[in-house]
Length: 408
Image (cartoon, rainbow, N blue to C red; front, side):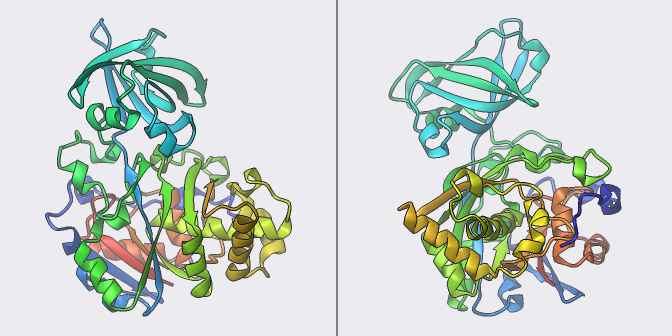
């Protein structure tokens, strides 16, 4: 496997006119365009025709994460508006437990208008479930460009999830250059979203409707879900000329024993809906590899480091996906767990060897982004063919834009 650290991100640039960025979704999700890339050939259709182009009888994996209303606004007595953007839970550091906290929760947050927040406790009164409460936010230590923030409120019958539901604002992508609308609460969630925790939607899934999902089941495809909570780092631009200088954000994943067993039944191969599913599936392989190379590996050791796949390439090239997945099952048996919870910082770039993912359904990504690197790695460097076709044929780009099916 080639080490991609010296890739120049400027080689992954293209001209994306502002008017080609979809600011709003289409009225019907599955009426979006579908670009089909198969073995170097490009055509297009409508998304409802997806089953016509998929390899038959395969396993399709979806990310069931749900976007939380993660933006909180406080106004100081001076009139200054402070935005507190919840990134990931700290205390407790489990998403589900944190959402169920009453009276206190701590999160790692990005702060908007940070210079105006001198360290005083911010307050806001609100009505939640018919009860008047006061929410406070206290800023703690800095962690990189983010801060520890302690939230407290004065009613033990109200959970932090209740507060976000009432007080929070859905964080639509910054490149949409508009305010969040009430309609985004529905359109910026997949129809199968379940597990709260993301601050950005797994947008390839936004095209699916119950009708499309039913047509896939009836056509013989098996549908499985996993969870990767998408962090704000998904929008983080690559600012270094070589990607060696770019640090990937940590993302938290949950995969059930049943999903891993289904993967094994399909010879360790799957069709991934979205780049988040891609990163999760490929991370599973490398977690299993860690267990095969280090049988006494701990939970912490299973975290997939950014450059791990490339550093271990020579030692792992003989390990099959099914062997890696069986190692994960053995680990789960040993520790009596039915759901694997862990994290990944994997970067997939040209030079990466895909192990589990055999086809990808994905949207069109920003120029000079790590997601474009992931696509290029999958189509053996042929990303310009795909993006030129999309630009020349009226495709809409980014989160609310059109979709593509990639089969190398």
